[in-house]
Image 1 (tube, rainbow over the protein chains, first blue to last red):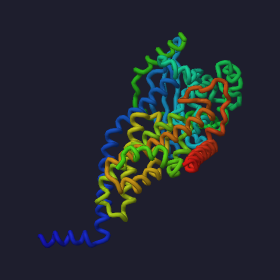
Image 2: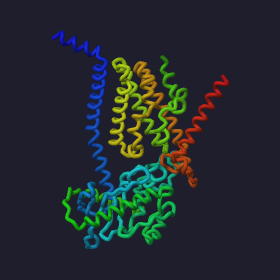
Image 3: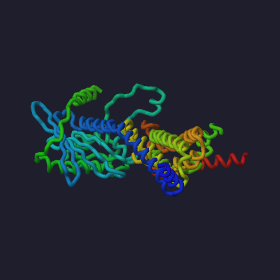
Image 4: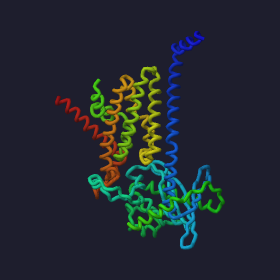
Length: 259
Length: 199
């Protein structure tokens, strides 16, 4: 036995491959062991983040709709996720739909969720993921803020709890998905542009980032086309979402009106 | 061993970006906003200090011809820890830094310090070296990002900087990064050469 052990030790000391191989394997094994634990710790948190984001987005793109039904269909090998909801408006039941769709933008896919009613009018969009250039395409997430750096720097104001949305996403409200969405260049959007843009069924693009604007409108129309074909089919439901969060939205809307 | 000297050399004398010219890729890419620069500084400094400590602990047991793969494994593990933590607790930061968090692995500043310093010195000095280098890296990033964000987007920390000013779009794009970094290198070199002449 002792002879055997000394043989092994000798082998390790003399062989130019055995020792480095053993050390490398040990280091990699330890690294993998630690990382698997870190992953396990952070995984529930990461999952919760994505779920919360989805809930928030649904809440914004289908305001006031209840009994949302998540569905999943496979199109050309890719998952296409959409939701169906109902709303009672003046004793009339109306249906609303939402879907997730993406198109390549300038530096990566721009993934957005869009909600529309049974007439094809957009109720709201929410950009879930984007990797566009900061200051150009990434301004699709920019909230028009008149707040100056200096005022917030010198006067430690209470955090402004406004629920204003990014203007680029806000301007999609009320557009008709059944017709083509035009992209105009009118500079930054503001409320006074709404009427003019609704008439031509268009949006004003982000300055210097027409590709991002195009990607969003393209993904909306592509997703709508897919959904229109699929909507008459019976598709098995995936899961039922709870509707607790809808009450919050009504509160937010009320606050907005008060402002 | 003078700890203070090891710390301050990263800030000025051996500034990783302006003097050693290491880690230029993240420097050019993430400096579009000051917030990004500060988070990048935090992430890089964390990885740098941790890898320096670990490398200086295990330096005796690593045969010299396989040291680089071992260092890379160590650095990559810490970067993955940072990546997962940010993804779980700071998703907005993770989204805005994007691919540049995983790319800290190939930041040659970190491997460079492990190879040049931590594998030859003890733990305590390695910590100071890592801190100094990380903060020096972060300071340079922040200054670069300050000029790019204020001139290129007229913003600071996402808030309007000067009302009514028209931003110069080129500054926020890649050319702006190269121009600003070039000017900073020029300033640094002229400072240093003037000091030499005077002395």
